[in-house]
Image: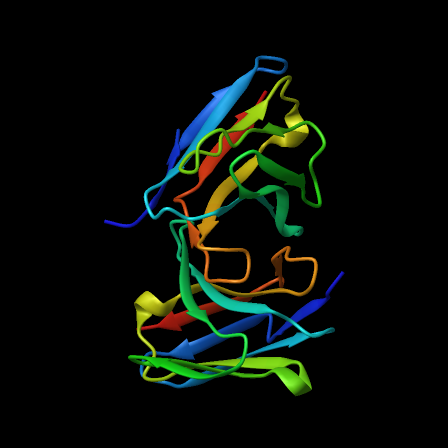
Length: 108
Length: 112
C-alpha cells in the first residue's frame, strides 16, 4: 500500500509564529486530506486537496502530486492550533491511509 | 447541521460481552468507514462501505463485523470483545471514497 511520511514529528512554536508541515507519499493518489486532531480527540477535516493550492483563513495547503508531497502552512499560530496534524491519502485501492502525524504545541 | 454521530462516546465493558457502536450520518453520503486509533500505531481502517449492502475489509477487520442496511447507518459490532480491542474508534463518511471525509467525535472503548 501507499506509504505516508510526515515531518516534523513534533513542533513547538511561540504564539504568532508561522510553520510548515510536510507530507510525503510513495505513489500517485486520488485523495489527499489534512486533518487536525484537537486535544479532546476530535478529528477535523482541514483540506481535501489531491492537487493544487487551497486557503482557509490562516491555514493553507499545497499538493504537488507529480512530486508526491503536500505542505500545510499555518500562519500567525494560536494556542488553539495545538494538537496533532494528520495527512491521509488514498490511491487506486481507495483506502485512506494516515501518516503518523505532526504534534504541534503552540505556547502562549 | 451536517454531522456524523457516534454512540456511545465512552464505553467500558467486559471480555466476551457483545456490543455495538452506532454511527449515523445526515449528509446522504455513499461512503462510510470505521477506524481505530492506538498509540504508536496511528489510525487504521477496520471496515468500509461504498454504498448500501456493500462492505469490505480494511487493514484490521479481525474481531469486528459491520452492516450497511440503510445509507445513513453503519454500526460496528464486536461479537466477543477482547482487551486488545481497547481503543479509540472513529466513524467517517464521505460523498464517495475519493472525496473529503467527515469524522464522528469518536468512541473510547475499554475492554476489561
